[in-house]
Length: 112
Length: 110
Image (tube, rainbow over all chains, first blue to last red; front, top):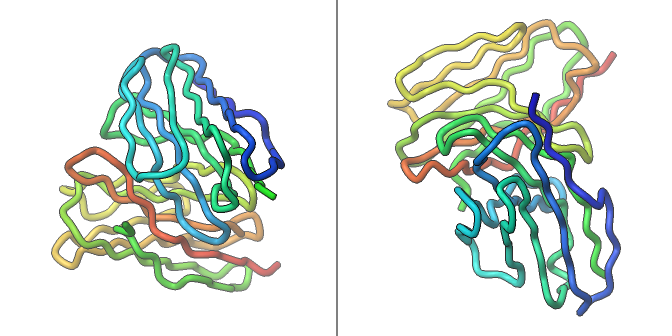
């Protein structure tokens, strides 16, 4: 069966510090991968998605970037965090573009 | 941009009652999906209904889709305290991306 992992679970970072959040998927190959951000009490905002290694699509201009160095690894990064980067970050995968998405447990990021 | 918008934003019911949540959207869709999120956790997929389907069931869940009105509803029958969570609809458009609504917070009182 397939599983998706995210770490860390929680993170508190000062403004201006770098960020690296990691997401890995097990039990499948060539998944579509997604990064979402969820503000408190709100829905999910799609940040990036990837249909293959090195293929990243950005949905909104922002202070973040994403990379997919391996088939089942998706990384969300920032060189300098802003206060507005605080939120709940969720990684998801799907077997095809038009299909159910399966979510990881999320990372709660607080930027102080 | 928000595609699906849930209504109501919050719902409080007694255990055993039915809970109905609605979702409206604006553009043509490939499918509409409902997800559940317990507080501080990831989302769990509940049900997917395709644009050519009108109704779908899964256990105590019933989803309807009216593409002429661009709306969907999620019915949870015989609710339980464990159903307390936020429920999101998500629409998939022709670009194959999911756009989530802001959710309905359901509280089921024991």
